[in-house]
Length: 371
Image 1 (cartoon, helix red, strand yellow):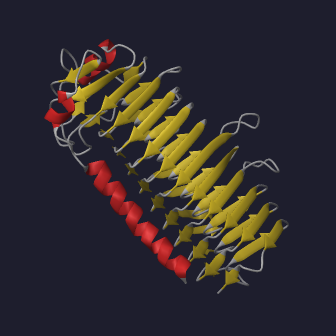
Image 2 (image 1 turned 60 degrees about the vertical axis):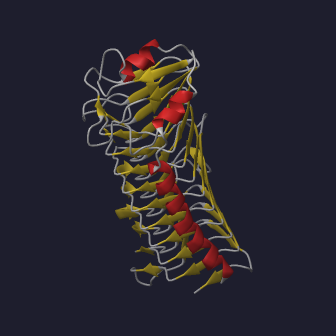
């Protein structure tokens, strides 16, 4: 039962660290004290003109750091009036804390776009109320074509009529110590990844989509997307398929993380849906993680179709579906090592509670348990 203690400790500990870090504030004067010629200051909450954030981004030299000498919290944010802040050079945008600086798309614009060949760091801010229109690749919060790192930030209430309510990544993305919550899109309510992405020490919750309520990971057959999730929580996300994560043409590695209370009502993959419709494409690895309380019509914890799932050292508990309360495997491959299944429920007759394997390959080692 030691594994139970570790998982619950991880669930509570990660959430606490994420919330405290993302909401923490630093003293503005201390940050500005280190300013030099490569530092550009934001001195007001305006959407244009001298001292504004859009002007600072437009005029900063490549490699500069943008700091804030003013507080613009979510109730009185920097609301964009002239469209997306396009970042065409390498920059470090360093806010004093997500509770002190918010950048708002006004439900009209994507908040930030990172151009190709640019390396950008965004930290210590809130990105909210962005909107990406249909027939474009635009996310609600941030569209990334370059190399983007987001840390100690909150992305909330952003929406896209295409992919990536909070972030749509076509390049290289790293997210850490952040909260991605209450965003929505067609694909990837929280994050849509079509490149290489790494999410750590973060909370992804209450996002919605058609595919991948929390995360959608897929590019093309010849250029599959890669997504690594570690020490994070994905909870209360919902989608038509893949409530927590939808993986198509790609690879997802989930380690030391929790997927809880995600749902795909009437469809498949409450926690994770893995499958592109092409045999042998789509790989998910779940390591030392907890899938708990997820629900769907098929595969409450995981639904695997023509793809490959490897699960090791993990708990699959209290998930619910008509077929495969824990895992539903249709013509795919599932390998389980030291997996522990308990309390999963199925509503079909007969009830397929732990694992429902139909036409696929299933390997379960002797250290795994079912209850």
